[in-house]
Image (cartoon, rainbow, N blue to C red; front, top):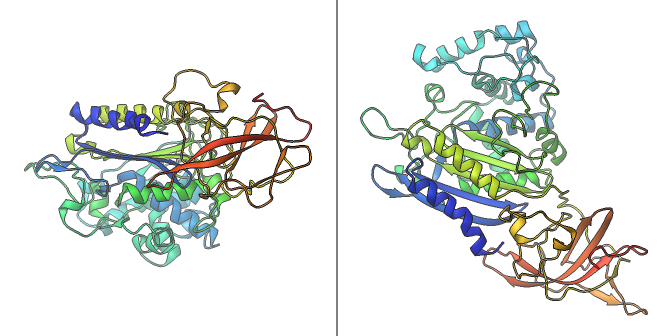
Length: 479
């Protein structure tokens, strides 16, 4: 994706800021470990006209649910310290409703516990202890497993379960099991530092804004650490989190468990939720049908969102301080729709762990002037279409790009190693194919060999197509 194409995304942010509904925004998008673009627009604080920066730290609001609470819960499960089928009452014996209704940890993760959506504890109580006492006595609205209803109290309870299992406060458990191992050094609860580090959120009655202090009132009453809200992070840390989630690294949580968490766990119920995540078709889904059905997303009330697709490896971090302009979410909802529509990807398997240097595949036909958009085991489409900026359907003949618009490609700086055989064809030399990708076209899966071209400052590589390699006996779909 070339800079002129990426500018389309930046223009969406600039337009939203210019219309006044969103003071400022930072966005990052990528595929797997490759970051394809970063954009910054507007103001971090409109009161003092402080500009937004790429490293501005945001109050993530409900993104806490997936980045912190879901992830640390799954990490504990992966370590054998709990099971998702465990009753919540086994860890919180005084959680009366959970005990009576046999609410499980999985019910909390999928918002199917039967607990109400929200409760304004902060209006009734003056301390964390009082809030928790009422939280644990909160009755169920419906039997567990009978309804999907997005629930802050459910994730507040899940945070308490994590503390009981880990034997330490939630923020310490998240730091030890999630943000520390993943290197998310600027992510955490109750952040320190001057106000200039942070995006301002809602203004108080006196006109000053909450800045560096959690916006959510219940989380604030809990001292800034809660299972439903309270986490702060810059866009770069969330980009690292998203790249890890779609990758093959088994650190923190096995990749297979992450895949399961990002699939619908709510069966035939009206809502579609994974573990923490909103799946396509859920009331909270922000992808609008433009991303593959394997994609998931989540939002935060302050104006934040995170979307990713484990199948294609695509991800988008969109952080705004929309609530700084007020609680009308019309502008940020429109921006989310526009940005995610612009960054859709075609559905295709993503296998970052696959060794693509398969010997014995012969070259058939050359495309020396083309540039291939490449990645590990994915459908290859024109640069315009991969990020959703093209309007026409993708056809087989479009799979080789001849317009000199390349995409970031993870390969070494050396050309691919190939060897001629007696017939004059070429065969991939085993183990020496840094410029090889697999392309699926119909029932034929081809290897495409290329020679890396320009390398930019982010180590993204253009791949100049040298040859198409097909299995013996197959005809190249590109001929």
